Length: 372
Image (tube, rainbow, N blue to C red; front, side, top):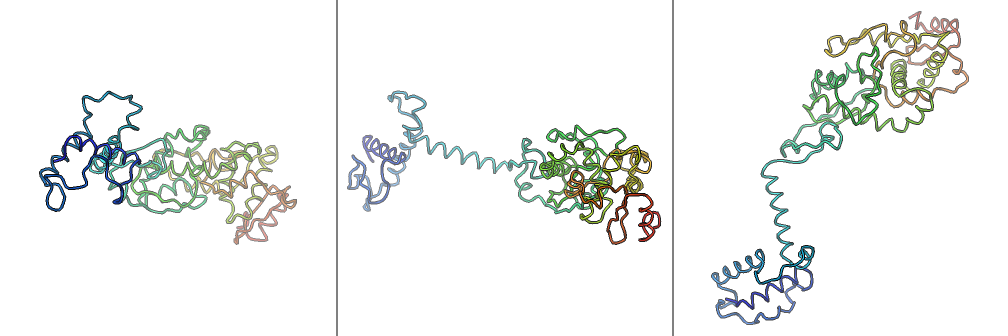
């Protein structure tokens, strides 16, 4: 068995190795004080006997873990640098924590990954759930209403329609200031217009709050570049969203959106002569509204633009980026600039007119509008 002095030499060598001051390759010279020949209690092959190995191992462990009483206490800030044993102990502690966490079956998962919540909200979710939770890809078409989205998410197992409705109407979304600025006067669904249409990957069986948060986060991100133009247009964000929702529902494609925007804005800017927008899509929204939603009711006179003046009280769907852009970037085409009427034919082409007489003639020619 090595003597105390030999053990001290071994410890000094190990300390140097831990600090990178001593090579550990097989060709490196042996530390001073350790005899090259086998010690007296070694076997015939030069290795320690099992009993001596056990004693040496115990002594090394004791020396590494328990400081010798005769040593002078060192400054705390010097210990990590001067004592090599802090490294293996730290590593062992980290490994132990990881193993215990795995054994406990917990895993940190951002809520934003499972439902779109803000990054400041963190949950503990079982590892099995975090790694194996089923997902589903859902495409929300441009112009879809709250009712249509609720049914779509429910059908695909994302969240229940009831949970979605409650989140739309009553959910708390402090990370999205625009929600608090929505004017609820005469409005049916609070968040109609702000549930950005797009393709999403959802975890299944989440709450309506999580699903709605994901849609609001996308709305905020996708419309960020438009905020300057919205401010310059003289419209509020909510007015822009409502106008865009009407534009979205009034045309089939995107090519006529800027023209329709120009006509609607011309009317809004001349309320004395054109107090009502008279868009068929608003009356259709009222007729299709799900009265059994359990959270909101709709007053036709607040939405049907043949009855109400100006914009409806709320959006009539959730517009895409093109419609939102058109709302603040109306057509500058001279052929459309002075128009106050439009009608869309069966091919989805919009026809613009400056006077009511021209509008009637167009409708008669194509069998649309009042001649449909």
